[in-house]
Length: 200
Image 1: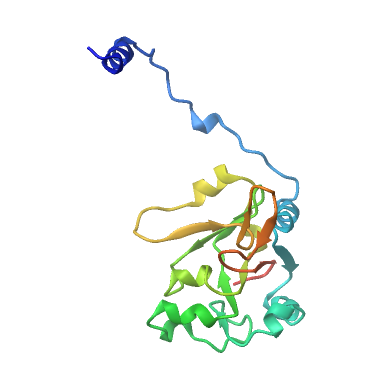
Image 2: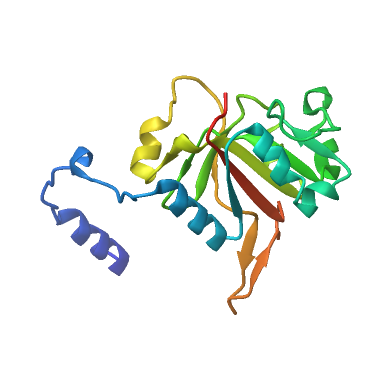
């Protein structure tokens, strides 16, 4: 018998005592006095910006002050009444054609205060690559839909049908071993999240 076989045989003889799985219903995630304020602070820390506005008109007013939006040549908006889109994503058959989009606006499902993540799905868009290929992104969602933590977030997820979903926190970024942070390395160079008090 080789030394390798000796080691494997010794491992197989060992028994590990059974342990009960933890009761996750007893695990309470962190909560915040003001989840929207916490979300905004964390989002800024990861390179994004949060805008808390009253309504859709407030979103459009704030967009008009953002140079990535005002200087954009090609704009997508999948949120009715928000922005002035000149590219209709629903008429594009080849998602590769979206590589020239400068600014894209999408509806977020909900956000997480602890890590500034926004849950995005493909329920309302034709090409999910649109979350990653534009130069700049904006997400719009009701301010009431900011949960405290990932425990609360997972309670809101539904898997009863096939689909696509992703948590996005801030713009694209990477850091090398010298801790040099680069924003927009692999995708969007900026992310603006609009928390709207009166939406729908």
